[in-house]
Length: 220
Image 1 (tube, one colour):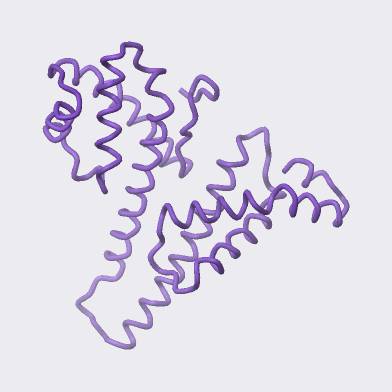
Image 2 (spheres, helix red, strand yellow; image 1 turned 90 degrees about the vertical axis):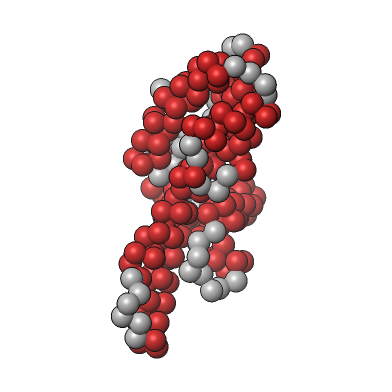
């Protein structure tokens, strides 16, 4: 990435792209598309992926390695591009439907916001699971606490939305996976809740959660 930006030779940049950047960029674009499943794209996935890669290449000159990892930067670039295109497609669909059906009782803006909220919820939930998969042993030194935390992560993997989650639901399912006392679950849940608030703020501020092991890339 850095060598690409420092190069002044078109041939050299093209060689770097083909040998080092093309495959990772395509894989990242495919990951973002498949993970967040934007609703308003009619084009073939391969075409959408190519558009995302082209947009990332347009933004490559703006990448500053001193401000963070390339993966995080280009994940945000790709996601923002898809959100913009998704919103544009939605607006086009809304206008078409309004002209076609003249359904004045339907609140398109509200429906669109609900779709956005649902996509954001699923996105954050996925990143939350990734963070805890990499950091359980950092926060919990006792084997019993790690087993409880692993049980919570397993439950998170199976839900579609944090909005359907509640304390009673967690406690019941944790005990089914890992028999333990209420106060032991509470201790682990309190630690995870504290970090949940910080991770939620990070997602709200920058649109992504750093899921790395915090011993290697600390942000707390």
